[in-house]
Structure formats: C-alpha cells, structure tokens
Length: 227
Ligand SMILES: O=C[C@H](O)[C@H](O)[C@H](O)COP(=O)(O)O
Image 1: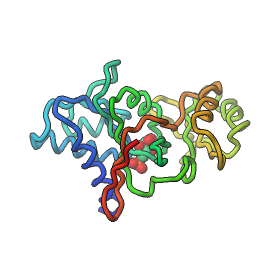
Image 2 (image 1 turned 90 degrees about the vertical axis):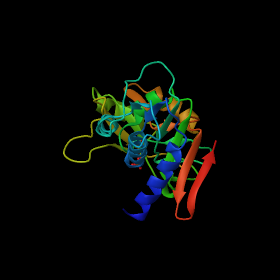
Image 3 (image 1 turned 180 degrees about the vertical axis):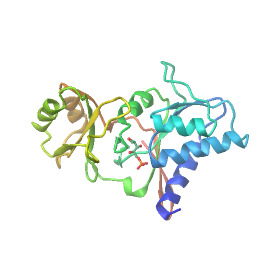
Image 4 (image 1 turned 30 degrees about the vertical axis):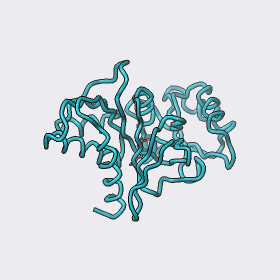
C-alpha cells in the first residue's frame, strides 16, 4: 500500500470509530470511502459493532457492502445517524466539491438526510478556495445534453463533458457529467443556485454547509477539522 493510501485508510478508521451499534450509516463512494466500508465490515465481523444498516450512495458501494456482509437498505425518509464519505476538495469552512468519481447526486440525496456528515481524505484535498484544483462536476440529463452544456457555458465557459473513452461517462442515474472549470472569484452559494436553475441540470458537486467534520490524514498524523 502506498503512503497516500495508508493515510486515506487512517482517516477512514478514525471516522468509523464514531459509528455506534444499531446505527443507520450512509456509505460514501470512492477510494477513501471504500476503506471506511471495509473497516465497518471488519468491525461487524469481529463483533466490535452490531445491528448496523448501511445506505449506499452508489452501485459500487452497495456491491462492496454486500460482499463484506454489511446489511443494507434503500434510502427512505428516515434520517441517517451518520454518513462517511470522501471529497475532492475541502475548503477551510468544510464546504466541499465532490463527484469526481461520478456519485455526486446519490451522495447528496443520501447525505442531506444524515444527522452527521463525516468527511475522510488525505491532505492533498485541502484547498483555500473551492475550484482551486478540481473542476465542479455537474450532473445533467442525457436528453438534450448539448443544449444544457451550451446554457452552462454562458456563465461557466471553461468546462467539458466527462468522456473518459469513446463514449461519455454515464452515472448510476443514467445521466452525463459536465466538469465545469470555476472562475477565480465566486460565491459558491450563488453559483450553486444559478447552476441548479439551469434547465437540464440535475445537481452539482457542491456540498455546502453539509459536513460536520473532516478527518484529514497527513504524514504527521490525522487532523480533525470541525465546521
Ligand atoms: O463521486 C465521487 C465522490 O464524491 C468521492 O467521494 C470523491 O470523488 C472522492 O473520491 P476519492 O476518495 O476516491 O478521492
């Protein structure tokens, strides 16, 4: 395991220490959230936790949870006790960009119902302002996607349809993703409103005011950041 992977795992283990028996837990998506799901599975198998129910934010996390014997349920209107997930960028106030792994909409729909959203990451995800390193993923309907992209480009010109190969990337919801470059100076809440008001947009990778805390692993240890 590389040093960075070891750090991600360390952050995940710290977050899973907050989970108590009997809780309903939102299972995030991505390479860091994977370590949290594995740690939950380990604790269940070892009898260190019991009665946990996972609510998955992607098909991939659902498959991993099942493989590890973690009971899962679909999302319903009941609140989740806590959710644990990774992030692509973490601002000092714990506003986030998520979705480089493509799971932004299911993550947001799930995590908005969590009493506590706990973020896990390595130190490379810390930024002073959102958009510093990552584009903003925007999930858009496949139907009329070129028209939606044109509407988005009117105010977010630097962006492109996510297309890793010959075909565009398709989310678990059957949609496409426009990766928008962000301007140097913007108000995330105002931009979020404007993007979500654009016809054809499903949602964005902005997670604003949602995270309660973040465990961020660096070579000199895990820092706990609290909003
Ligand atoms: O769509 C993916 C999610 O938002 C991930 O949580 C995010 O991309 C971070 O992933 P990773 O832990 O693999 O860097």
